[in-house]
Length: 301
Image (tube, rainbow, N blue to C red; front, side, top):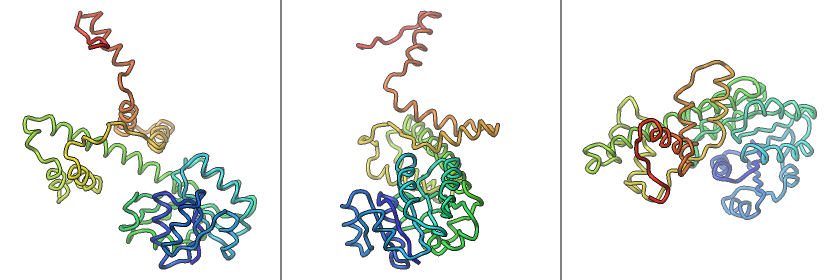
């Protein structure tokens, strides 16, 4: 099968490599250096969206793998002017599911089929495959399923339903991921602060927990790898970003009146990680002084 890939970041680049032996891939990236590089891997390159579309046979399939937000919107707008009726556009950039509904309607004006694909796997996807959650018309999904099968590990993909459902399932997936990561972080910090914290080999704890315990997971395997590289994580600042999906999951929980305290707390902890000295904590210290005369540390101390 033939496919055009837009975006050669960490995910898009490796997805091309995973597909290239079974499918004809034409890859485009805004910066030409990455196109040069992937051509050396045996993938057909294109230096503009126009060139990429011209190299694809109708009906075309184009997969957009750029960050959610403005990059997705700009590429979809450009591709709307280049693609034709019955072409397929797959959007895999972890976008908000409501945006997918609007984008599908917009592209549908030209008869372009829109599919939203949640993609999980990170930098390991090339080796082990990408877990894929896909929304859109089922007959169109069947058309692109050979690509999905190549990208995913065995039983690692799902047709979720109509447009928006793929990104929705991926959104909740990432909300759960936030909570799991927070739980592991808190647990290992308790271990490190214990009476045996200096003696415990946290990499070995992670390894052992990953062998049959009820909390085993791929994240635990990654924690083991991180501890083996740097047991005290001394090279890493505890500043944790979020890319949007956790916020959307919490917002959806509010809209649906579904209690999600663990996911919400894990999101707020990420916000807290970015504050050197929060105003809220300053007020807490001030209040303790006001009601009880409890000492507080001054800025210069």
